[in-house]
Length: 232
Image (cartoon, rainbow, N blue to C red; front, side, top):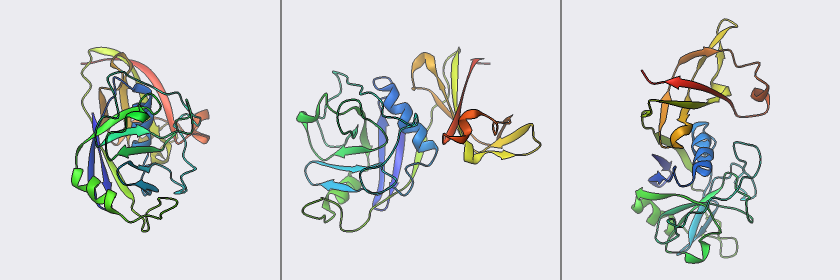
């Protein structure tokens, strides 16, 4: 499972560790699918250390998870800040993950078991090089010119299971009511709970039942449904 961050300086392709960190990847992928990260700035850039983004306010103090709360850390002995291009959740202490994340510029062993590693850069290291060279404020490490994530492409895999339980994330702003009973969904993601997040499928323009009255639709950026399925 991978995504590509399309930035002002070029592309960064990131492999996600969905099996090792299912909750962090679930949050990240759902935020990507809802365009949450579009136009986010790289607001903190420390050469030889890391670059940070994922805050729609651009201040470094904002951002939220898909659950509208902080969520817990996920540490794995096999995942270390051992190289350039490691992608981790930013936090303000234990179990305070939300939407912000950072990418390392070098090995940072002191971050191990303090920040959830959920991916690594696999392509676009020249873009990472260019990011590291951006001039910054000497005190805040904020880039002197704004560099953004323009958009994110999700590289989805087909569902491989023979059966299981599905969870569907529907971006409510994509919903267009047609006849009061059904509507068009612009985009949604499906995951199989039986194998974590390793199998996602992206669909467009499917007819689903009207979700406008769902209680979550008024307070959440997308509505969540669960149902059983059989692969045909």
